[in-house]
Image (cartoon, rainbow, N blue to C red; front, top):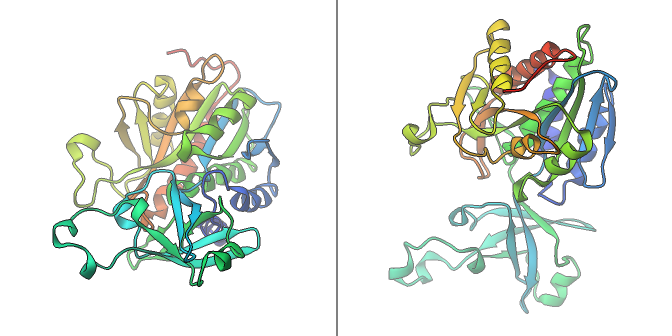
Length: 352
C-alpha cells in the first residue's frame, strides 16, 4: 500500500468516533478526499465525495465511519462513572481496559473496573460481567471532582492503536468499518485519474451504521443512486471457534468477499464477479440468506429501489479492540470497486 494511503488509514483509525460522534473522523476523511473530489457533508453528518457529477448512472459507494463505544450516563458520589453501550458489545471483555472519555475540554483517561476475582463469591465467578456492574475510574476523589471533567453524554472509546504483526496482518480498534470508509475514498482517488469513467460516483463515509444503518438511509435518499455498493467487514472463518457450516469459508488474504443473496441485485453480483475475473483479482463469495446487516440494506430499499451490492473485507475478532485483517484484501477491494465503476455505462439495465 502506498505510504500516503496507509498514513491516512492510520489517522482515521486513531480518531475516536463512536456512532453519533463521528465529527473527528469525518473531518480527516473530508480533508483527504477533497484533494481529488468534490466533498460536502449533509445535516446527518455523512461525508460525501463526488466525481463526474453529471455522469450516468449514479453509483453510490458506502462505508461507515462510526465505531462502537460507550456513553457516560451516571456519576456516583465517589466519582466513578457508569455508562451504556453505543452499538453491540461482548460485555465479558469490557472490564480491565484502558479507555478515554472524550469531553468538550479534551480527552480524559480512565480504566474500566470491576470487583476483583478474589472478592467474588465462588459460585458467581464463572458468570460473565454485565455492563451495569462495570464502572470507569478516572482517578478523582468524588462526584464534584468528576463533574468538573465529565458531562453526562460524553462518549468513551478503548485505547488501542494500529499494530502490524510480523506476518503482515494488521490490528486496530475500529476496522469495523473505518476500513470501508477508507476504501470508498481510495476508489475515488483511483477513479479521479480514469479516462473511461462514465458513471457519476458518490462515495459516502456514512454515520450511525452501528445504531441501525441510519447514515446510509439518509444519504441514499439524498443521492438517489441507480446502483449502490456497500463496503463493510465480514467474519473471517480461519480462526478457532467459527463454524464454517454456518458462516461459510472466508479467509484473510483470500481477497474481497462478494455477497450473494436477497439483499443483493443478481446483475450487480454477476458484474462484480466478472470484474474480478477480468482484472485477475482474487475474490470470495459469501451467501447471505437474509438482509445483510450492512449499509446495503438501506441502499437497496431507498426510494423506488436500488440495484445493491456488498463487497466485504474479512476480519477476525469483530467488535473487539483487536480486529485483525490483511491489508491486501483492502487493496484488492479498492481495485474491484474502481473496476466495477468503470464498467458502468448509461442505460445499463439492472432489472433482475
